[in-house]
Structure formats: C-alpha cells, structure tokens
Length: 408
Image 1 (cartoon, one colour):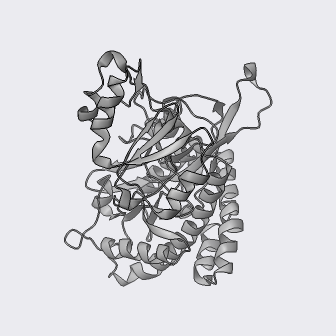
Image 2 (image 1 turned 120 degrees about the vertical axis):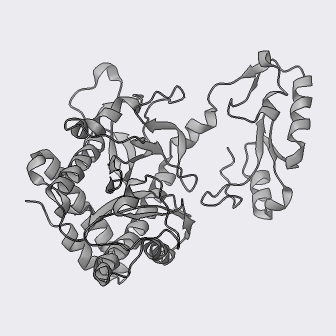
C-alpha cells in the first residue's frame, strides 16, 4: 500500500504497522520514530492532490477503528486474517472480509519491479556460481560441513552490490538430512558433505533490487541409476511447469499435476507446494497465488507480472532429498490462436543458475526437454557469464562454462 520497507523482522524487510484507507485520507499507524524525514516528504509531495497520508501512533489503531464504526459507515473492508482483537471491533454485518485487494496489486509486478528482480537474480547467480564452484573443489577434502557451506553462501552474497541479507534461513543438507524438507544446519547437527551423497541447497537473498529463492541439488561423486532417475523425474516436472502455456486467470492448482506427472508414473510424489508467490524486495512467500494440489479459495488465478517459485522435489526418508527451484515470471505467451480473446500466458525463468546435468538420465528426457535445458543453460552463459567476467570472477566463470555444456 505504501511501498515502504523496514527491519522489524528477520529475513523480511517489513515493519509493524496498520493501514486504514478512507475516501479522503490514508492513515498509517506506526511508531513515528521509524518514519524518516525522507518518507514524510514523500507523503507530503508525491501523493495525489485529493488524498493525504496521516501518521498515527501504532497503539491507537483499536481506538481509531472503534471511532470509525461509530461514524455509521455502512461497510468496512478488513482482511479475515486480521487479529481477533481488531475483527471484534467491527460488527459482523458491517464487515467485508474478501481477500485484501492490495495483495493482488502487490503480486502483479510493474515493469520497474520486474527489471529490478532480473538484476537481483543476476547478482544472486554470480554469488551462487561462486559458491558451487568453491564447494565442488572443497568437498574432496572431507572437511566441508553443511553449516560451513551455509556460512559460505552468505559470504559470497555479501560481495554483491545492494545485498541486504538472506530471504530465509538456508537449507544446506546432505544425505538423510536432505530428506527433512525444512532442515537447517547448526554447529550441533551439522554433517560432513560427502561426494557419495546428494547435497541439497535451498537459499535466497534480499537485495535492494529484489528477492531471490533458489534450490539446487548436486552429487559430487557417482550417483546410482536410481538416484539419477529420481533427479531426472523431478527435472521433468520442473521443465513441464517452466514451459507450460495456459489461459489467463487459471489457478495454480490446475498446473500442479504437470510437476508431479513424471513422479506419479513410477509411484513417487512429494508433499509440499510446487510453487508460491514471491515479493519484490518483500517476503519470499507472498500470497495470494500459488501452485499446489490443494484448493486455495483466495487464489485469483495467474496474471501477467506475477512472480512465483517452481520447485518440485522428491524426498526419501533416511536416505536423500532432491529439490529443483527457480523463480519464474508470468508473461504473455505467443500462441497461434487466442480462444475467445482470453489471452494465454507462460513462464520466463528469472533464476539463472546451472543444473547438474551429470545427474540426468537423458534416456528419460524428450527432445523438447533437452532443448529446453540447452536453451536455459545458454541464457546462463550469456547473462551470468558476462556478469562473472565483468566482476573478474574467472574461476566461477570456468565452472559455469563446464556445467552448461550442451546435452547433445
């Protein structure tokens, strides 16, 4: 609503506040010491002529809502996810509890936000290419732990311009720990990263430009045929979502099966969502749109400009875990026809970090899937390779070139 950021929470650039919008005034209830002189000037000079912004103390929100109700307003729109303390102040017959319209406005990114998100993902790709190049060299020593690897990711990201901090706690997991979908290493639980086990890394960064979230799964030794099959089937699901073409406003639930089809064919599955919305230098999990097998009544359907994750996986308790995640931008699809002028959409990958192709069983891939992978890796070379050279990170550049060799 205000397009402001703060630092009241770990990982999320948010601040504690309430907003109330009336026909004449927008009220921001916040501890005033958090509002800088620059923000106050912005409210005075950049707002529409007929709308003014008033800053009120955070603790007065309940008193203000009670006053608003007494003004005999017919209806007050309040999110049903608001606290009970606020909801109970508004008589039920006066409430509109539909999905907050600001959520959709926030979910659909404008051109500047999209371009900034692209920039953030290039910087993030540079950092992660450096990390994986370093990790591949160091694993053989037998001294790299999950915890050390998580710290190293942060080191590489901090070298990038406008990096603020992680967008969530790093999942750095090897072997059986990778089967725990939300495992976070500590100095007490950490495990040595072995060349004979899967290593799953799921992490993200907050940059002034935007928010990132990426997962890659690597195997630094020689995987078994079964491990390659599992990885390949997860990859097939990832490609199916990435290359999907669908009508505007289709709900994410209708795409979810595409990600699971190859796993289902052999009796495998995963229990988490396939995708969630992501904010533009905001929360890494942003509603209301998602890709999930469960019904979400608040999902308005996919629209151009939304950014979501594409993250199928497979987890085998006590043995290993696999996840492949990119962030993707919803964009117009170039289709031969346009049924009833409804408009068709597809996805553009924002994350540009190589997949480990030695884990693929290419006999399970179609020609179209191999072409998709080759095209994706060529974009990684063109965009991230250029950034690595410009930053003088030649070791990571050489790693990128090796990892993006065409499958043919």
